Image (cartoon, rainbow, N blue to C red; front, side):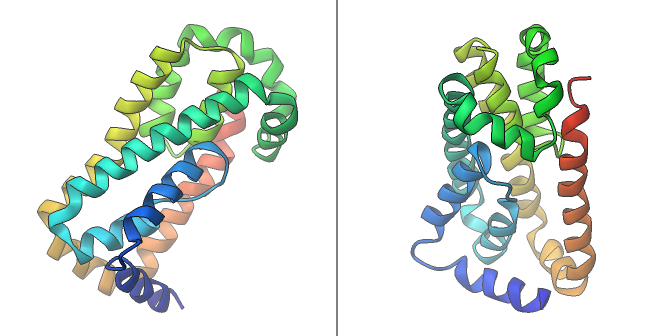
Length: 195
């Protein structure tokens, strides 16, 4: 089954709407749905390595815009939307305690949580809006964090594309399980992020 999904992803990577779909996925992943944009991004780069930098830019820009939407959810719609999303990630009960301390290190949380760790970025964006982290600081830290998140794998696949494609072709199941483990780790770690 994984092989069929992988083959389908490679075919879809060349579709005329692939870039729009990638942008929409990155936007949604940053603001309200649990997703892993790399599932679409990596096959797109493997299919057309010359567009790696373009794809990284699309991902970064749409992800930051999605992060701004998440910030707005926290800022304006916390009761209606933000609270249920935080409950989904197991953070609703302790969130009130940490909100006051968040702004002291909020920029660092955006920088680390948004780019380096598997902690869901949407939790960071909602927390930033709820605690009213300085908006310019939030956006700048998001650009850096999401840029690292997307440009690094794009650079690796650009320079090591043929070897990466061989790895995906021969060890697809292993790559899938490692990626899934990182996503699960992010969801498990999210409630402990601010303790």
